[in-house]
Length: 118
Image (cartoon, rainbow, N blue to C red; front, side, top):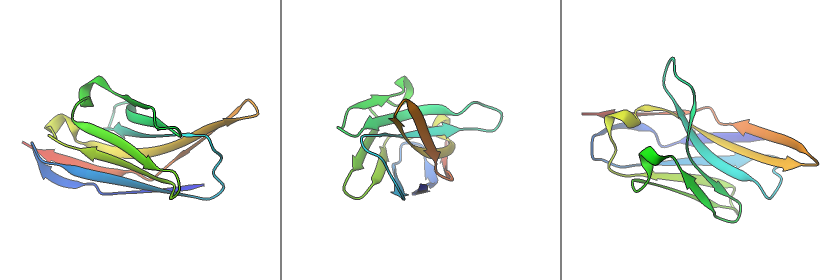
């Protein structure tokens, strides 16, 4: 399974970006896809995730500003980020995981850098 994230860049505070993640390979459904972010010296943290059926979960810090969505037919994951803040600066990673026969399988994309200037 391969995940390819894109859409990062430099944006001013208050601006917007849309991240995309394309998944390819032998993907089992149902599954959960999510976005995580990480800064140097810090732990990777969950930004938002979404189940195959569309149930969503957000970190408190992004609620009301970010929207996660997916296209199951195309194996795509998206993150619409509005009202960006300098604290949102990080490398953003997409994740795909599922449980099959009591085993958990998890995959990461390569990361895309989001930089928010004040």
